[in-house]
Amino acid sequence: MAVGKEKLIENLKRVQDNIAAAAQRIGRDPARITLVAVTKAAELEDIQNLIELGVLDIGENRVQQLTSRAAAIADWLDKQGIATENRPRWHMIGHLQRNKVKNVLPIAHLIHSVDTLRLAEEIDKRAEQIGKVADILLQVNCSLEPQKFGVAVGAAASLAEQICTLKNIRLLGLMTMAPLVDDPEKARPAFVRLRELFEEMRNEKIGGNDFRHLSMGMTQDYQVAIEEGATIVRIGTALFQ
Ligand SMILES: *Cc1c(COP(=O)(O)O)cnc(C)c1O
Image (cartoon, rainbow, N blue to C red; front, side):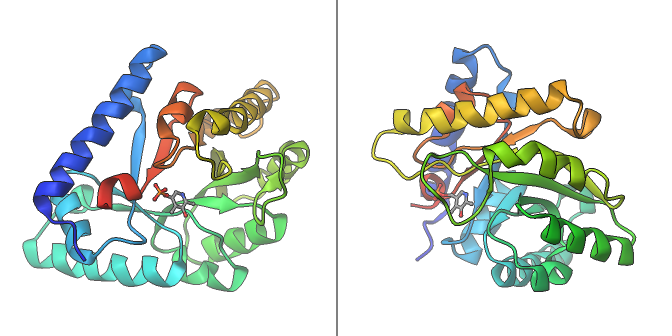
């Protein structure tokens, strides 16, 4: 069921206020933190409302849903004659299979979930075919437990270096998913690990000036993630529930 515009306005304000407060606690400019609204469990109507409220970064974790929704939203915006610069940017945040790269690449503004060289090579190849440079993040497993996706912290820098040799890819930074925990403070060590890795990689000049983003923090832990340096937070439940 759609949450409706009134509730969405309220939820959005609360999330934006929390983002601002967390940024201010560590002396960062809230305007430099990008809110990606994760719409995997939202209705199309809520996405439309959110776009009307000015949230233009939208994240989906499945290729099929990302492409179908991007098409539906594009139709809706076409009917209203909305200019390209006021259109949403679609973020692919979930696990990406190589055989789906060709579908998502023309639409995705940023792919957050690259974690193998084989996947990066497929993105590079398909990007070249459509004359595009693909912006990506490297997904890192920063929790101490094994996770299904994400390169291990110890292997991340060398993978990033290999990815940076691919001509049709731009590595913009790192992404992680903290373990699901009851207390957001328990997620903090994973964010600290990602930030430290990010700083080490910057010192080694991996990714050059493009390398600037830390995508970390979801509903349960985005305030902590911002305190630890997130530049992109990915939030679903707090907006649509
Ligand atoms: C679903 C999802 C989110 C958002 O999770 P919420 O807890 O609903 O805020 C963020 N990142 C990824 C990769 C997701 O799949």
